[in-house]
Image (cartoon, rainbow, N blue to C red; front, side):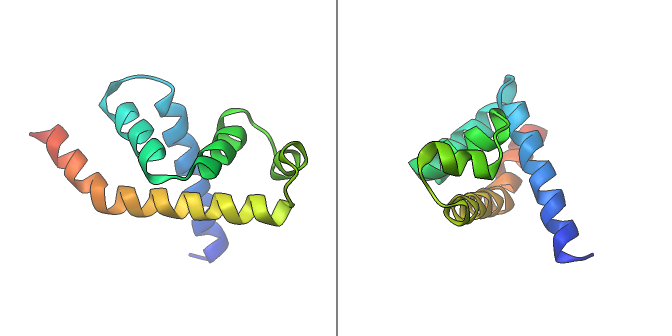
Length: 99
């Protein structure tokens, strides 16, 4: 699988997690907690604007007075933090749900 394909799957998975977050239940609470605890304020803001408000990276950059590369880099770092969090902590959460 190419890096581009992997990145596309990660985007889709994160978008789905965030949409679930708007609902209820244990998974939603876990995702909401991870976003609040693992991300910086700026990362939370950008991820909310991009995934929940449907803004493009260039729109976010314009609204916040940032360069598009800063928006892209900050979001990439935020997604990476969430990916690592779910990779290492997600197993414990899923095991707890199965008990």
